Image (cartoon, rainbow, N blue to C red; front, side, top):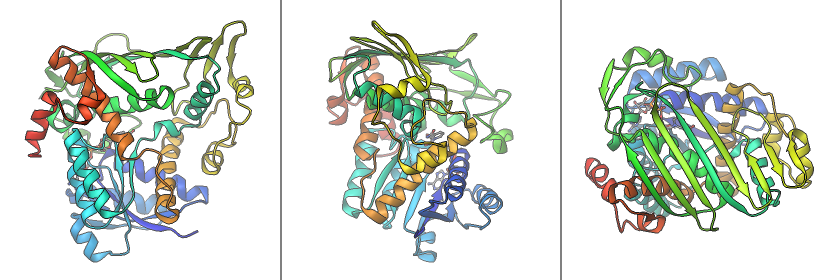
Length: 416
Ligand SMILES: NC(=O)c1ccc[n+]([C@@H]2O[C@H](COP(=O)([O-])OP(=O)(O)OC[C@H]3O[C@@H](n4cnc5c(N)ncnc54)[C@H](O)[C@@H]3O)[C@@H](O)[C@H]2O)c1
């Protein structure tokens, strides 16, 4: 199989996670891309990622501190995988298209609609591929959640109830996740939640929400981030920061289908953490399986009772995973899996890499394209806009920028 040379641009925590995903793709025997370079404006971070890559993949990617220099010195590289911090995505992605690269860009595509549109304009002019890094829906259990809903197992979906509460006053990974203009935690994590909800329920049409900053001062916690991806930088996290990004947003969502959602995102919760997800339909309910855990989804169907584990597969006889996920997770029909969390995490991003290679080589379209990525952001920003205006806000209003009071300071910060 031809392996397309690509570069990781952004060698922080997520750059490291993407590197592990590249390792999983190599191990699968289906690698259609190869890591040729890493690029970071912080040379020490680029060197650290290249060192780790050499250990993990057996070949050292070349190190660059600018994409222009990389373009000149390695004209064979066809794509960049952008894992820089969220606020910079629109600048880095726009430059990547102008330099002639295909792009896989981590979510969110940008922090504002105007930023997304800058990327979309550059992408359209370039004729290259743009895929947005939204890996959660690629989990075999999320594929099964969707197949079961689409098969009508719980009838017509009435409502999605989703919530999480944790965080206290800790700095969540890096300070930038608490600064509104360069990437608040609600948008950073919220685009995942929105993508899941719209994947199962279809598009959101309107949002009414209230938001708040409960913890304007945050402090360094005992560890940063998940599964030690960020430990290398622990000493760099300041002891205390002033936060201005919302740490609580409670939203009511109207879906185009007529379904209604309730979504609580609370990142300043002290005490006991909370996590819930339930989809109610005209014939029963579904507790959707979570990504990377492998635990089965659970249905409670009128007249039948509880259906879970492999029995769920009987409801969707035509459900099959594609070749690479089947190879990574062990079968093309699974009702649960016991793959360790760290492996499931790298497998999901490996699926994104593989799809990027297919898009470049075979001309297929990415599943999460620029418009899906922009809409995921628009729902989050509609919630924040709604709280500013004190009224419900449609997704169309956000996507057409007919109201953009919340986004105004972010656009001003980035001078766009
Ligand atoms: N999909 C997921 O599950 C998931 C999880 C975590 C993070 N992310 C996303 O990944 C991105 C990176 O997050 P992170 O936690 O790794 O951030 P980070 O701050 O740890 O790393 C960002 C890196 O990008 C570099 N950088 C910044 N601007 C650059 C530029 N113009 N050119 C080259 N390098 C530049 C920084 O020096 C740093 O090394 C964010 O957009 C975040 O939302 C996604």
